[in-house]
Length: 446
Image 1 (cartoon, helix red, strand yellow):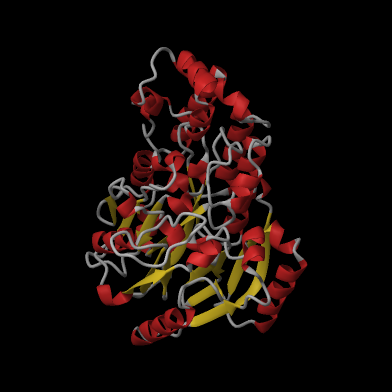
Image 2 (tube, rainbow, N blue to C red):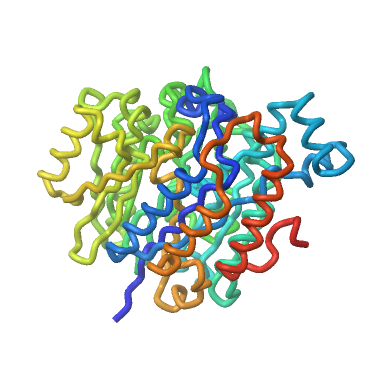
């Protein structure tokens, strides 16, 4: 008998993947600014992760890149002429703007949307709200294409409900699933934990060095849109002190799966209260909360940020235990690797560690968890997903061949003005939409 599963839909790295240092507050992004990138290798690394998880029996899907450079937005900003003329002008006079409108950041689909399963929503549908990503311009332009992609993948209105992004306002800054955790069994109602960085309307603690990207007001709005029961929603504040240490999203300091929350001691303003709320909330649902708190004395916040220990994936296996998927950087850090060994030896919930090489993504500030959007699905909902977007050995081979045909193996900011690159991207994406049966989701196709 089929069962409810959590499917992971990974973002495919785009052909304009480069290091521009656009994300203030993301220290890896800033540190590798203007270094040469390898888009082909980046895409292959992401595909290898998808294939490994699919081969291990997990439901794995793929979400396509966005069209970049984004010429429609440049025209909206008053640039005119041919595509080549616009690219030349912007590269000459507004280099960082061209970089922002060429960013491949949509590959980190943990920010694409917030997703609530049908077990939690009053109408029994899976709800999607595209994130507005208001805090960063290069990401704030993603919402329309993200919505089109999600509608093309989860297209059956009997099972899926799509909401547009919240208003583009600092009051409703929304970073999607990167600041959202769902705790509880897949096949039963659970708890939705929304993690915010600041209150937009009321004064409260805020970080001093880096921006708090998620607001309480945005989290509350998403909960209303998704028809969630208020008594099963927790609004939790991220510790401002860790945001100032480079924890720009909650998924850099905590990760959940089913009844398990794996989190750093300093993740929240009041970790003890959060633990108590989760324990009581799951108990009322007949479930046991398992909190795995990592003490600062064992793994510092700086080491968590440097290795992306918590930007990992917790995956439920058929035998009732969990695998944690971590980036190569965790294995290369003796202290973090030793701690993971202790977690596995204890066997409370996690008894296996899998390591993936995502060096190209990591250098831009995104680990395994950044690259995936989690969607809990019933058996009927699984059948309603666009099947062409689900990873298989044949799709893996086709996508690797597609990458080899269309992606460059070296790219930096100077290359973004090349009109040939824009043509390469559009040719590639046009072919990809046919391969994945997505329809005309890009502006150049319409």
